[in-house]
Image 1: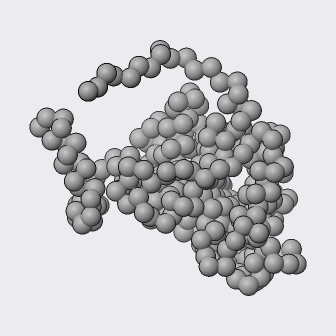
Image 2: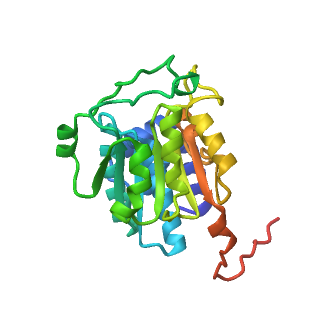
Image 3: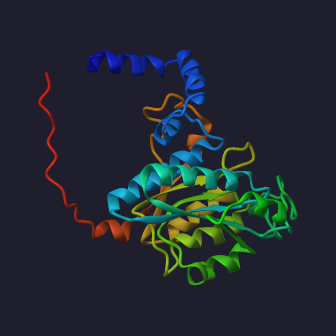
Amino acid sequence: MNGNLRWFLFRLGKEPPLRLLVKTILMQLKVSVKTRALWDISERPAYLMSVLTAAQQAVKQNVPEICVIEFGVAGGAGLVTLEREAAAVEKETGVKIKVFGFDIGAAGLPSFIGDYRDHPDAWQPGDYPMDEKLLRSRLTNRTTLVLGNVGETVPDFFKNFQPPPIGFVSFDMDLYSSTRDALQILTHPDAKLLWHVPLYFDDIGFVFNHKFAGELLAIEEFNQKSENVKIDRWREAGAGRPFHENPLLERLFVAHDLSAISNVVLKRSVEKLPLTD
């Protein structure tokens, strides 16, 4: 099969309605992590896409080990999936991956800040308690639970756990105040980040969400205060993907370590563009 025909069939397979058939077939096969990430074959496609991207970034930077983090574990379905996908990505890329899950635990959501910013129109203190014993029974030693209020656990995280560079972070904290405190993990004096860290914000797409409260407000305030790390949307995250309209892609952002990038000197040959008609 020549290259042009192969490219045509690949593109054809990504078009509706054939893409649904292709995905169904791929789900029955033992395909690579890269293929699963492209075709959203995961219980948390955004997690798999982000962890794989982080590992690829680590390879580019010659970083042998990274950590991935979920803020807001609750029942634990997301953390279990994150652990499983981290193991799969590690096996395929060779980059070692540790997993951390931050949550307040059995108490559920903490006390609110006292105004509209924590969306009292959607949640209340005590929502989403964790069954710690059940969750721990489903996790392996790859994953560490960090329990307590993030305003207290984040400042001590690096001293207590000496984690490798941060590669991916998911924020499912619901509240503005908790997200604000969790974001400080990106600017802690002891934090080490990849140059570009994929971020996932779970609670930004509901009808009650707006940029003056919740996670979106926490992001805006973070960017106002942080000089060396800035958060921006993952632009064109769906480009080239069969299911490019997946709404989960709109929840993906990237934290860019501007101070580290400023000192980068690429060590490779000069790239050249081919002459085409």
